[in-house]
Length: 307
Ligand code: HEC
Ligand code: HEC
Image 1 (tube, rainbow, N blue to C red):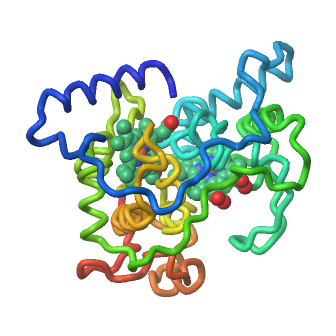
Image 2 (image 1 turned 180 degrees about the horizontal axis):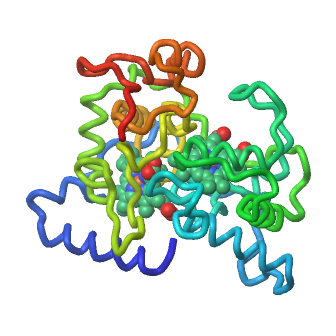
């Protein structure tokens, strides 16, 4: 998280404190129930190297470029990005944070078979996937500078990590199934209490001077219907460990599932694999209780796509 964003965040919180009546509800003090399970905060076995140890040679230049692409994707990889997100919005602390699908936890686990596309994916192909879906953009071609730089960054960060051994804190947390089926109205209440302060009442986040300060959670500028975050299990695991930002692990599991449901019961850009029929696309790619694509929520069928 860059400095200007902390300043903005501090300012927002200060502002909220001055308007207790409407906004106090979103502040930590009113925060309710105890967490049912807890995601360990750090991966004790592996710490990625500090940025200061980045080499200064030609290889180091690519590592640095990879980091810049990761934290300011819309600027450094503009032609491949179709929304207002940056990689770092979902892979926190520039891809260095355990339980936030860290890059040091990912690089040594590829090539890997993925049921999403039914073949063995290289790390570069995995990077392409997040451009196509999470960034609602275009996959940079193999060998493109953008992929090479991101690969160099993830490789450098993973040095010393054993190959093919899933490190603690890789991927997102897997939460136990909730006691009650996730619910829209309960999720909406969690959203108003714990999320709207930063992500906005309408979930559209906040941009300042053309930069995303708080990312949009749904709508045309967010991840599309083909993205991993569209799945309730991924979203609940991410939210539990990392949100509200700076207060990870404070929501109950039930709250995390409910607010994930509420977030993903909103329209977002169409799945790029859409074949003309929401029902057929659901059957082909979303045939799981963890996807709301093609289901009816509050009287409308989800999966129409937001332009
Ligand atoms: C909207 C959220 C979101 C954004 C933005 C996003 N990703 Fe991801 N990414 C995910 C999810 C969800 C997964 C799957 C995590 C899991 O398997 O537990 C993932 C997985 C990955 C993985 C594989 C991780 C692993 O452990 O196997 C890589 C590599 C990756 N993303 C790179 C990127 C890059 C590079 C960008 C920016 C170009 C990006 N992501 C943007 C949500 C996002
Ligand atoms: C204090 C401000 C703040 C609050 C409160 C907050 N978030 Fe976030 N959220 C952020 C920031 C900042 C990021 C991006 C992190 C980064 O780039 O380092 C983020 C990222 C996300 C993302 C991934 C990016 C995207 O747009 O999809 C999701 C999902 C998310 N938050 C959901 C929630 C939910 C649900 C809540 C309420 C339980 C919540 N957040 C509360 C600040 C906040």
